[in-house]
Image (cartoon, rainbow, N blue to C red; front, side, top):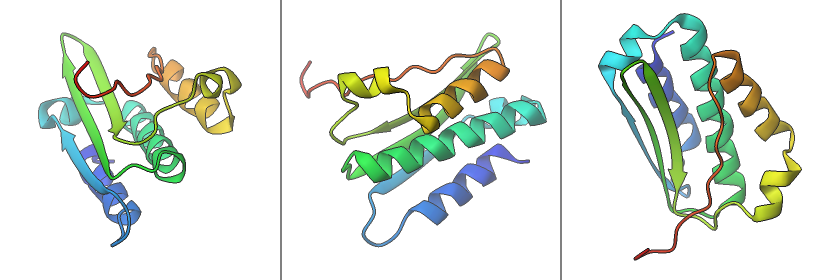
Length: 120
């Protein structure tokens, strides 16, 4: 699995003429150093988060990024949509539970953060 290429393919499959703009940015040094299991889990998390954002947020722009430093890895899927409602983080539907499981399998954690209003 080649994470950068797979995330670019995810973008290509998700983006249509009527969908939001999707931007993928992957630190190649991090991507090449990933174990296969980590890359697969990151891809699944990015795929589920992208699907959720496109389905629920009403966004016009979606960013997917992977970066790392000092043994840590950060996958961020961020959109400019309506944000996650407070009760959505409590409900933990199957998609969110799956993302949590994939993160925990590699010693990570999933954080769902609400959008911050512009200017804050």
